[in-house]
Amino acid sequence: MMSLHKPSDYDIAAYHRLLSPELPAFLDKYLELPILTRLKGIGLLCGTDWTNLYNNRFYYSRYQHSLGVALIIWHFTHNKAQTIAGLLHDVSTPVFSHVGDFRLGDALTQTSTEALNANFIGADKELLSCLAKDELLVEQVNNYHNYPIADNEIPQLSADRLEYMFPSGMALDGSWDLHSIKVCYNDLVIAQNEFNSTELAFQTYEIAEEYCRRFCLTGHILQLNENKLALHLLGHILNLALQKAIPQESDFMKLSEREIFENIEAHHRELGNVHDDFGIYRLYRTFRKMTKIEHTDAPLDEKKYFSVSLNVKQRYINPLVLIDAKAVRLDTVSKQAKKYIEDFLAYKDTAYGCVEIIDD
Image (cartoon, rainbow, N blue to C red):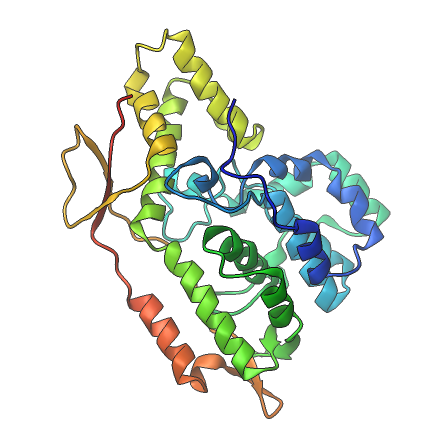
């Protein structure tokens, strides 16, 4: 009934082999757990796979992202606890990923569901059984923030940030391909940063500079009003649907994105395709079919347009690079990288993004 824009011709298995030629055998039992397989129905790109406003080149799931993060951590650390913590870091992600943050009013930090992660892990009996077989405690895997190679603060480089932007750039704007990923990835090592913590670092100045450029380009896409409007509109639709119990709140942690949309469409059919509770289907149709938005300094007529004005999380990078065997921030040695970062941080889209509501 519904389909994503295009089937993937991007070899995700080959990409994952770049991250780690070896898939450690101990991961197999975790990869089949429902707490993880649920993430196959949740896209990394926050619902943009489902709107004509975007033309994403392929679908990449939170499950694939979680595996990618685990493979990066394993490649650099060969530490079982850190690797499993990375694998489990998104188990509390709801459908449409960060749209869940937008609908809860957290567009700026996009961390509203993270606090649930430890609870999900600690309550899953099948997962706890797997951990026991590996002689691991829940506390060793329920917070990947404890491991700086797995996660750290922007603009540092971590496994999560590295993995997120490779497929995002490939899918959104084609800024990465397998060859360029391989060149970049093979240049990374673990170094000590200015905070006396471990961090991924580039060995080659030119590769670090190019990585910074591409990262900021993809990060820029996420700052545009197109992205703000798409995520906010979808969040608004979901909140309206909740008021009519089309999904229950718990469904966002149980159903796939496809199933949520199928329920909205089924509800509309049950009403005879005429009555539209709260304008839900009108907005849903707009989200699915919109192909462009207006960039304005003020909201447009609310009877005809859906308008949004938001500040959102800024995703950029200022990685470490080794200069004479010492790890330093790239912007301290590269004027070009400093400009990439400054231009990214200074960018402001128009005050509002507006889309004309589609009536049929």
